[in-house]
Image 1 (cartoon, rainbow, N blue to C red):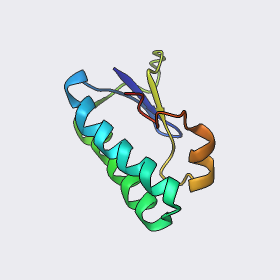
Image 2 (image 1 turned 60 degrees about the horizontal axis):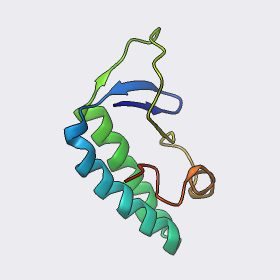
Image 3 (image 1 turned 180 degrees about the vertical axis):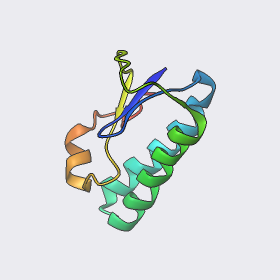
Amino acid sequence: MIVRIMGEGQVKLADSHFAELNALDDELLAEMESGDEEGFRRTLGALLDAVRRLGEPLPDDALEPSELILPSPEASLEEVREMLSDEGLIPG
């Protein structure tokens, strides 16, 4: 799957990592619902770090359709709320 991190670029990620990312997404969603800004920041960072660590960056000139679009590390809780579907950032 191809994942775009807004402001950074695209990463190719094996589907086998979906469960790990989905667990972080569930945690992020719970923190957003409770308004836990500190937890939101920590978990968003962990989610983005996992994508970077587990994935292979695509060249800057590559333009593949992204299956997932994740917010930038600087995104606010409100900005991410606006991006979310009912299923979170990573549809399960």
